[in-house]
Length: 471
Image (cartoon, rainbow, N blue to C red; front, top):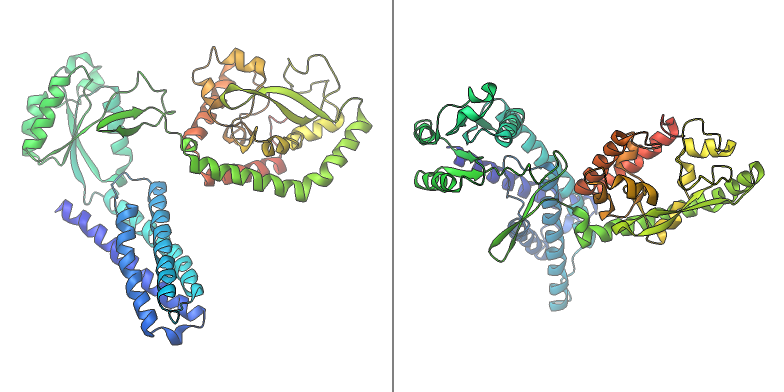
């Protein structure tokens, strides 16, 4: 019954998609004032073809590879692939038939309006339907019965996740472990029996999925559980204990296949993908050019004049800092301090006497960082990324803070996730730097174009309202 419901969800998705596609097709004709040609043979052929290519595109894009724990971002990625394939196939159809028959001319405007309308409506439909299904499951309907073999720390965290994410639709029935005495009393009392008891329990209660969280040393028991699941048509899923390798809440695990051998990657890095790097670089160049065209061409001479009028010394402060792959580069800032011998060694502090009057304004609004758009255009920095540190700090903190050097897997940024979340300015102690590193590593593992836009908006808001740690 549960499997039938899952298949029904997929069928409803497909029917909804096709209805939206056809409604959008009609809307495209109406808006482009082309509706009088809607029933012409060439448009009827196109209409049939569009419905056929939807089925192929949906299969190739994996848009129906939906699971209870599938994230919205994954669903959006699949939806983008679906429409990309549909657009390529539909326009290919027009090109091919145009060459075959010169009278076969179709309106590109109709297709453009159709796909824009279809994408917006499909996104609303898909996410709305999934939200309704998850609310339905959160209320206790269409749940899958699950149990966990092993009751260690990873198993306990997994159980908490199942209970917290009620919308996934999993009904947790209990732990089973051969050695309950090795756990704290609070945990051991949650264990319903040993592994042999688990088998009987699974059959009696018609368990849908069995999660095995035994340590890898228990290889024989794990194999025994997998064989039991296969024989009794119970899906067995392994929850590996990677706590020895991962830093809590920082890492995401990816599994790739090299031939037929699974290889686990302990950190997911979206920017390792060349397409994502290309998108980020194009955005960096485009955004920086806009800043130069609309702001920096007049802002730099104005600030340069104010700096010169209020203190002696150069307009710009240039300092060696750590960049991508820990390669040093010269970061460019407006000079905000009186010329002093400690500029490259000592951090700025609140009420620092070295800061000039104009420097206080520049630092409090982050405007002293504006010349770094030059670094961005030179390819040394990105608009968004971990802030580059002085070489002295990199050497010092890399020895005492776990994952510190991970920050250098990507280009440093003018602003970043750490900065918009309050980790900016002076690092008074190791805890301040640890917080910054956690935020930077989170950014590296969760990068998306949308996240960069969000950080830019948050940075602008912080600049307008001011920040406590900006000094």
